[in-house]
Image (cartoon, rainbow over all chains, first blue to last red; front, side, top):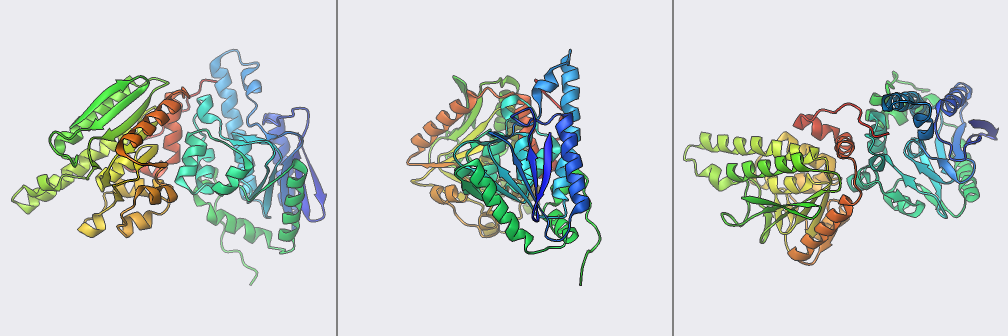
Length: 240
Length: 237
């Protein structure tokens, strides 16, 4: 599950609930989607999203135990996995089209879909004392869903980094991620990561950007990811 | 010509020098490469990797222009060039669809099609004491085949410097540019490091079908140009 609370101009979306790894199953995905659509409808100039997790994990990706449980056959498991892949797509689409700046405060491990969620934000801050960013698919023997690959390609512009992260399954610490240009800054604890993200959020909030324009500019910077996610560009939006 | 041998977990593909120390790609070498890589593709299992290397001072000096020019008729010379470009395409396509990690040990000059051949591998290691990566097309006044350009766009962040400026890039610079993973002080140490990396990657025992699909998803434009279509969802969950 997740919770959404407003602290000043910053909306804090926290992955919490019973599963300390915040794995994405239909319940968590539904909860994220409704939080994000609520946010999109309540955005005002100066709103900012800060996403973080409670505890040691940001998110450990899709809920593979749920995929494997209650699936008598491997084809039933494949169907469940596919249903997660399909239902997570609008979550990523919602973040990439959210009419406000978005910040992920990565408080711990972010792997596979959890890594994707983090990197879908405009800014990623990460704790350095523990936790890694990790695309586990190659180690799990899973192909990347099209929108995973599209978002990774769009956010990681260095071919060598893209290879190491996606095709090499590198487990990337905050310090390495800063050097790779994936993470904005590394911090020495989960708390200080969230605090730094709050400060960044307040700085961004003061710009009072028009949400609709912000979202369109973001989309124009990530055209391939938006195409795969089915997000179209709107006609010119202007306050001139 | 080239040889293919199995060394433990590694397929080692070597460009050999008996006919041409520059390993220029003419129809004979190209068909020999395609046959070797097709063999790797059919024999690849989890826990294997490919290492491509070359004998002597050259990794590969590109297409065999001397063979093309040997045709007295300029029209025939152009056809020969076209023929080599068409024959390298499936070689690159097989490389990019191999279900195992691929490592190029660039043990000397890699120019034009030779650079493309090297960069089509997942990892490129290069000797630092001599040899350059060089795309001479601009200097020669030839345009790039579509799949050359696609590979360069996908693999080289500073494609302008390499392709549109004809810069000769040594190993250290190539490491800084993110094209080459590591530079080594001789051909032998480059090949050894490539073998070690290949063994390390082989030990991951990645599922070949997923590996090839993930690679494809990273380079969609290259795969489009080469006609490599995505496969349906595979999973061992």
